[in-house]
Amino acid sequence: MVKRTISALIGAPLFLGLIYMGGQYTAILVALLTFLALREFIQIGEQMGIRGWSKLTTLIAAVWLISLLLGGAEWQLAVLVFWLLIGLGRLALTYPTTSLAEASFNLLAVLYSVVLLSHLYLLRQLPNGLEWTFLTIFLVWSTDVGAYLIGRQFGSHLLAPQVSPKKTVEGSLGGLLFGLVVATLFWRIVGGGPWMMYIILSVIIGVSAQIGDLFESALKRSAGVKDSGKLIPGHGGILDRFDSLIFALPLVYYGVILFS
Image (tube, rainbow, N blue to C red; front, side, top):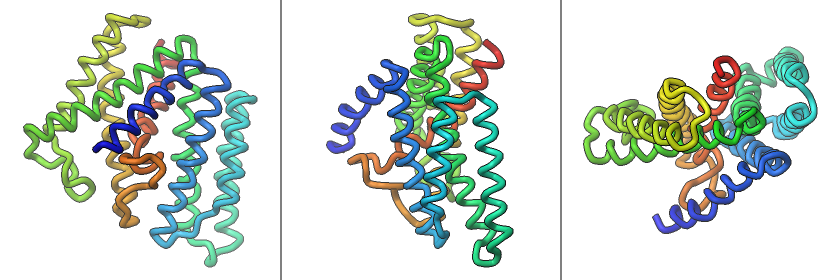
């Protein structure tokens, strides 16, 4: 618990500070996080007996990040399509040396660890992006805290026992309730949009954050590992710390684009 608290006291201000400064600072943060997350994802696959395409996925990750920073939406779509074709092409040319499970896992490694997580940068670059990014982060954190506190006190009905034996339905609802409170406070203090939009986003973020957490738990359980890594004392790896944000960030980004 001491290590976890110290890591949070150091890491959270640094994380929020780089996002606050925006621009190249957020870009550096996102590049570092995505490469570390990709490495962890590949290592989890190797624990499952799946060969990782470390060099190829790292190259594609670099190309994706360059397209993110310098190109437009067309470049990003092109990178995704080419990556899909490269993965499927490798399966076609080297089967049965390369299995469908191997190709699928490595394709997913880039999509999950790099493409989804890099929406942190995309969201920050939007008009009023700082507010939307902070809202997403605070709602994810409040959902996590609420789920833990309510679940520990009142939890009795397991939410997904085969994936996470400690998460409960009561905790999940408590997380959503905490998110609603934080969203209302954020709206009153910061503003920037209609009240109902904040409420809708709080529900979307709360649900997606918990699903993201359960997905990473299922991934680790499939590999028989407790944590995705050991980089952050008391927290595990990058995926352990950012699993909820990975699912929430793209939903907020496209929601803001489509409806604001």
